[in-house]
Structure formats: C-alpha cells, structure tokens
Length: 273
Image (cartoon, rainbow, N blue to C red; front, side, top):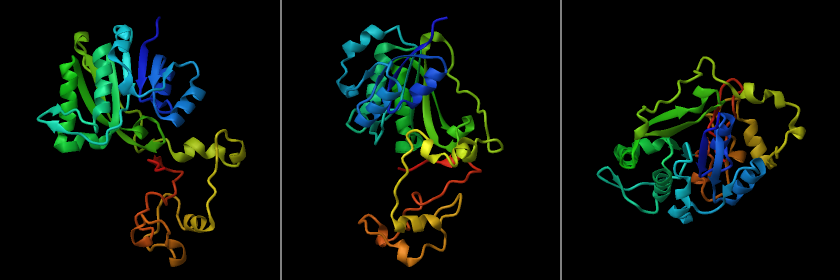
C-alpha cells in the first residue's frame, strides 16, 4: 500500500515532520529559512528534501507540479498579528506568512491540511481572525474546524496548548474530526516518567550541554522548591537584585516564568528559553 505523502512548511527542527513520519507518512519536502533550524533539520533528516529559502520567494509555478500528488500539508506559520475587514484577512506584513500557507494549500490542493498556531489566535480581534482564516479556507474549497489541544492530553509530558486548524477538501465529502484524547489529569505522563532514567547519566546524554550558572543564579535556584517558582516571600536582597535594564525596579519580581523548578510528578509547563 502506497504511503500518504505530505509537505512540511515552516518546519523548524522538524517536530511535525517527525510525528507524521512516525505515523507512516512519506515527506515530499520541507521548507525552512532559519539557519539553526536548517542545520538541525539536515542533521536529523538528511534524506528529506529541504527548501532552505524564504517561503515568500517560492513561486507558485514551482508548486503546480505537486497538485494531485500530495495528501497533506502541515505547518505552523508564525503569526505576530492580524488585520481584518469584516471576516476578510488583510494582506499586510504581520500576517503574510499565513497567506503563504494558504497559497500552498490553494495551489497544491491536498486532501487535508493541518495548521498549528498559538491559542491566542482564536481570541485575536474578538474572534475575527479565526473567522477570517476559516473564510479563506472555505474560499479555496476546504471545510475547516479548529481546536485548542493540550499536548499532555495525548501523552506528551508537557502542558503545552496550541490551536490547530484542520481542513478537508470539499470534494472528499467527509467531515474533519480531531482524534480523541488519550490521557487526562489522572494518567498524564510526567516529567519523572520521561527523564528520571537519565539521572546519573548526564555526561553520556547526546546533545546535553548543561548551562554554566554564576554564583548568584545558582543561589537563586537553590531557593526554588520542586514544582514551584520564586517563593512568595521573595529572595534575600543580596541575590534578588539584577543588573539588566529590563528588570522592573531592578528586581526579579517579573521573572517567575524563568526561575522555576519542574515537578517530577506532573507534566512540564511550557518552557521559556
């Protein structure tokens, strides 16, 4: 039986690519422009063709030969902001990458597309952005649904929420449906489940580069309890002060999202670099 074929846009290091390949899909090509992600992609997926160029420079004529040859297009176009008139998206620099994803879908006409983004997109401009995106997909012949999905509900040890838009080409006469959750709060995969086996093996883990904290940062971390952030009572004055200009009042009060310790008994929160 022939494998389903897919194209991976805004591939990054290949997260969606890996998932679809593990599910038995055959990649046609990926698109990515950020150099560090390109290097990672080429190292991990040397046999997957990669267009390492700005997606906006890929002419529509280059896509036409793939029409009827691709089953799925996937990707997560960056979305810094949107403009709408009624339910129509306005083409401006803040949302043009979403239009590039839509252009690929419109030209290649896959059976299905899957587009991922931050969950805040659903409430953007009072919901007009979501309606405008769905209107665009309806215009090019797709029935579309959207849903905020938490990765932990599908066995990933992280409470990461993202919105997914799934569309099915109208001529297929089937409704798009998201898969049912496989996990819940009673049986989430935890940080401990995922990485406790690495304890004591830090020096032999591939690609593990531990950070070299200075004495002040090390002292701050020592005050953080497992599963918590900066204590409510704060940190001692001698280690609470910072030197960076973006610290409010030169203190750490706005950095609770950085200074925190994961719990081995729960899924991780979304990590902030």
